[in-house]
Length: 392
Ligand SMILES: Cc1cc2nc3c(=O)[nH]c(=O)nc-3n(C[C@H](O)[C@H](O)[C@H](O)COP(=O)(O)OP(=O)(O)OC[C@H]3O[C@@H](n4cnc5c(N)ncnc54)[C@H](O)[C@@H]3O)c2cc1C
Image 1 (cartoon, rainbow, N blue to C red):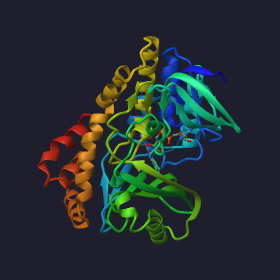
Image 2 (image 1 turned 30 degrees about the horizontal axis):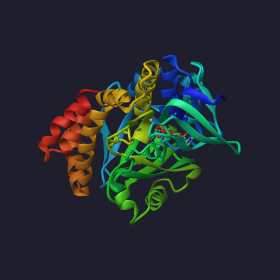
Image 3 (image 1 turned 90 degrees about the horizontal axis):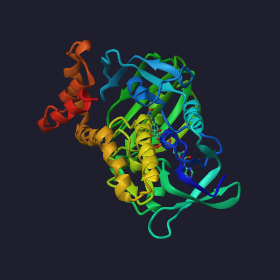
């Protein structure tokens, strides 16, 4: 470890790995700091991605994929199953332990240095500009300098706050998630299931994502607004008791997902935020793996150019914010509006929507059609629905 680098990335998740890889690929020296003892663990994820989404950021490797998903089913509050036609689009269940590890390994192939068990506890910021980090590693404290620090430190990010950015989120937009990996169950491994309804997952949804026919990630996210009345744990235990009474729990995950729009400011002098730290998650699905990687790629590229031009000012780094907005951020704003309208639907509305959709032949039951049907009383949102689902 040196005492200075061109760029330091805090966090070894998909966003951090991809930012580090692309900064190094563009010719700057990069150090990636990860507080856990190993990249990829603990896993705090349901591990689902769309094949198309993943392919936009990296060529999928068979060793990352534990299962291939061919379709999905939405279960209405009154228990009816609405299968959705995904056409030729498939999904993957990743093994994130391997996936995250490999992404960081790919970054090292570009010259990125990695330090695990390296807990960043503050920024070096003498005159308002971020100039490095303070890190604790194996009981020792180090100051490491950098022209640019990229905060990819996840949903509990503190890097942005230390830099003076406003990173708070409305309680209703922070999904409180709990997931259990269940074994000794029987599921169709080709389908993922989403359950809706106030009694199952208020202000969110419950998922069953199979890893194989006997094992699945079963979890739920409920809006922070409801979590104070009844916890995610109570909702999940009730569901598992009803649907999988003989299941054994292999693994339990607790975590938050910021289902909001991107933070207003994701750059400052000498600083960029990426991934969950910047709230770059799809506000409806809660999926943030590929979006963190898209942001990481853009941020890494802009960071390298800014360093080469010797201009790491907020103004120069704002190119990253603009490019992110074009790539995904604008889409997330539309998705967020749709989410707000969808979550206002009562169970009765959702049941009626299921009625209407079930009368449509399966090959015409696309996601865009479903949202259009669900939101038929919100004509102003129809254009957003079309843009979200047709332009991606
Ligand atoms: C229960 C649950 C289910 C989910 N399911 C899905 C899903 O199916 N599909 C999907 O696409 N997304 C899912 N997500 C969201 C997804 O996990 C995240 O959006 C994604 O991991 C974001 O990547 P990231 O790199 O921004 O952050 P992370 O993957 O969270 O990585 C951040 C890293 O920073 C490290 N770190 C934090 N603070 C410090 C510090 N001070 N010093 C050093 N290192 C630090 C952490 O240890 C961590 O390794 C789920 C989330 C949860 C909670």
